[in-house]
Amino acid sequence: MLLSLSTLFFQTSCESKIEAKEEKTEFLVTSPLKKDTLISKDYVSQIHAISHIEVRALEKGYLQKIFVDEGQLVKKGQLMFQIMPNMYQAELEKAQAEASFAQIEYQNTKKLTSSNIVSPNELAMAQAKLNKAKAEVSLARVHLGFTQIRAPFEGIMDHFEVRLGSLVDEGELMTTLSDNRQMWVYFNVPESEYLDYKTSQKGNNMKKVKLILANQQVFEYPGLVETIEADFNNETGNIAFRATFPNPNGLLRHGSTGNIRMEVPMKNALLIPQKATFEVLDKKYVYVLDKNNVIHSKEITVAAELPHIYVVQKGLGETDRVLLEGLRLVKENEKIHPKFVEPGKVMSQLELYAE
Image (cartoon, rainbow, N blue to C red; front, side, top):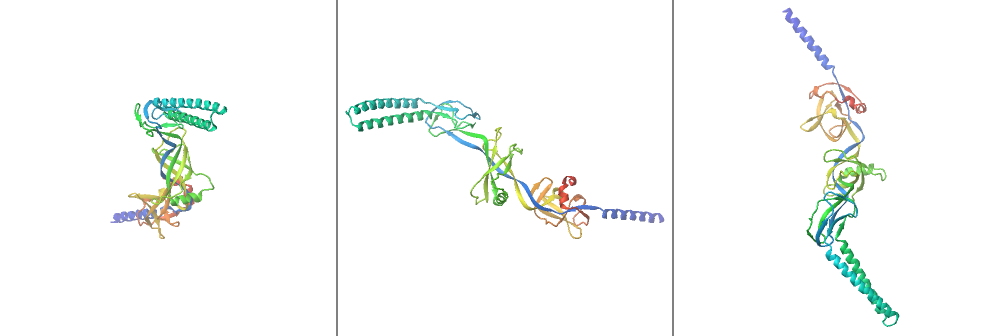
């Protein structure tokens, strides 16, 4: 019996020591840090070449020659297509012949006028007829020139809409041409964020933005927000921004997509460390301590994500005490011994506190 009592006393003593030790365990807690900050926001965007045009036939005829290929870089003025010029060449020769006849007629009339054989009005009519013939020559030359379709600027060819030997009509689409040396990227911004952007903008300084490509890589050249449209879309409440990006390597193409990443100012934002949160069914929670140091889980809504930091939209107040570490060691409604760490110190040493 003495042995049993001794064993029981020893076990009770050990358990008391363990409980005392557990009661003395301290957990780091902190509060949200309230301060103005910049957050990165992504906006779905559409990428357009700074010049993107349709190349159309200006005259009707058979497509006689194609001097370029699809996807080729062409220079300004480079010959791209040749429409059979025979008919237009004949019209030019006819107009030139009529102009020569009118020139001879004018010279004869001029001599007769100087001899007072015909009136000055006859000379004026001969002059008008000559002018008309010269205009017809110019017009025929223009029509003949339209049979040669040249690049209006340096750019990249798209696919052909017609094939060699096709009978093309006036105005028929031949291909498209894109000047990709600079790109215009359009994206829509909600009204509230537009107001924040405008109030934080200093003078006429253009804001730099980044382009996230479809493969989630950041485009190596930053862009500048140069234009904001005049009107809001009443259905979406958004307004369109346009950023211009240099494209010296030709990586960007007309019609491609991506995301614009822009820094947006947030006033009086509540910041907490990411490691102070946990997830349940895609919802984020934190452990908050009440006045008796009992922990309770509380759902929060995250407005933005920064390195090691969440910007809290709702769910927390500036004076709430949040469990900073040991989230897996505690349970709901458990009383703990907290050790408070100033929010500023926590934020400055996030790498140290990160697990």
